[in-house]
Image (cartoon, rainbow, N blue to C red):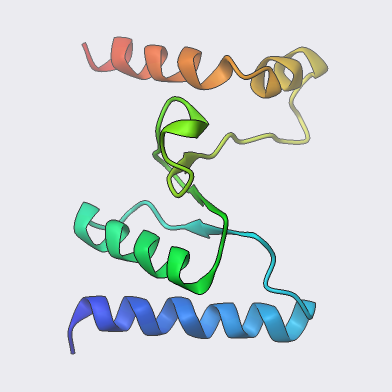
Length: 107
C-alpha cells in the first residue's frame, strides 16, 4: 500500500477519534516531523483540507511562525523549567536563539 495513502488514512482516522472524544476538532494539529519532507508536505496538505488553521511540528519548523502556519516549530515547556526559562521561551525570540544554537552546534 502507498505510504501517502496510509498517512492520509491515519491522519483522517485520528481526526475522527479526536472529534468524537472532544466533541470538537479543534483548530490545530501536531504533525510528526520524523518523516520524509515529501510525506510531511502531504500531511500538511491534508491538514489544510480538513480545515485546521495551523499545525505544530514535533522537531522542526520555521524560525518565524508567520513563515508557515502549517510547520510551526514546537517549543518544549517542562515542569522543571524555571520562570526565567519560561519567559524566554514565550518571548517570541526563543526560536531565533534556539536555531542559532543548533547551527553553532553543527559547525
